[in-house]
Amino acid sequence: MSLVEPGEPATLAAAVRAAFADHYGEPPTSLGRAPGRVNLMGEHTDYNAGLVLPVALPHATYAAARARGDELVRITSAQEDEAWEGTLAELGPRTIEGWAGYAAGVIWAMREAGHRVPGVDLLVDSRVPVGAGLSSSAALECSVAVALADLLGLELTDDLRRELIEACIRAETEVVGAPTGGMDQTVAVFGEAGSALLIDFTSHETTPVSLDLAGHTLVVTDTRVKHALTDGGYGSRRADCETAAEALGVTTLREATQEAVDGLDDERVRRRATHIVSEIQRVTDTVTAFEGLDWDALGRLFDASHRSMRDDFEISCPELDTAVAVAVQAGAVAARMTGGGFGGSSVAVVPDERVDAVMRAVDAAFALEGFRSPVHLRAVPSAGASVS
Ligand code: GLA
Image (cartoon, rainbow, N blue to C red):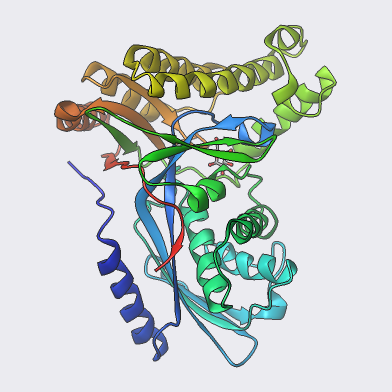
């Protein structure tokens, strides 16, 4: 069985500092930390001005930084073979290929927002599985943003946090070109230990929802089917949602009713909108179920959400369907796919004494189906970004 441990923050921070000094010949002056996330309910609802309910993971990315005396930017990662090097003037929309675009994009977006980010050396190291639907990209962006804020001597007030979130979203949507909705960056910054974060993308309010799991564990299973948010599937779902909103004469699907959606002519667009409208309602119901420790209701909500994503939004895959079905058979009270879809991870709420059995059952089912061996992690609800 393969379990990804988050590691001990102080140990990881020390390792990143040492790796930076080793690589660049001088120690870093700033270190930012930002977590990955797992979403409990509300998939693809963020860009429809809806509700989401993610949890920040204990698994995080660390970014070490040191200002340079010139215009050069150097970015390297413990996980990637290729480093990136260029000048501040080279940064901009769609100018940087590959993983470094997420980090360099933050420098560009912070400068666009008026912050005088200088030439800088950066080194990042991450415990967030990449391509697993657990927001390794937002963790990377937000860890860099926090490190740069520290480098500039800025205090992490709520206002600055909101500004950094915007910069990270611009890095992802404009520099990298992934048309995502903002949930990941918001929870990577505002997540709180012991809580999920209810985010309303109409009012932009964030409300921590204390999670008393009463003897249950959030088990995440990475199917290791790599998902990418830039390859068209995500963007085409978003386009379908916009088509539906336009046909209904509303600005976003947040304002649509199921009754109105039922009247849409195009069958595919109708199913996409049905997912969004029903999923937004499920977020509210999921908060109520967690608050009431109502595991039966939670099980029904997760099941309905998974079916909606599989059949109406069509973003699941055989590996995710297997992980979800087997987790429930092996004792999970609730399970669903999570994140953008087309691969990535599932999340299950599992009685503590069944955690091992659930992970082993999923491993066995994957072996039987001839799927790649999955990787599991325990999603202990953790704090958002900080300076380390
Ligand atoms: C990705 C995006 C988010 C959100 C989810 C689906 O994680 O980055 O903005 O749309 O997919 O809920």
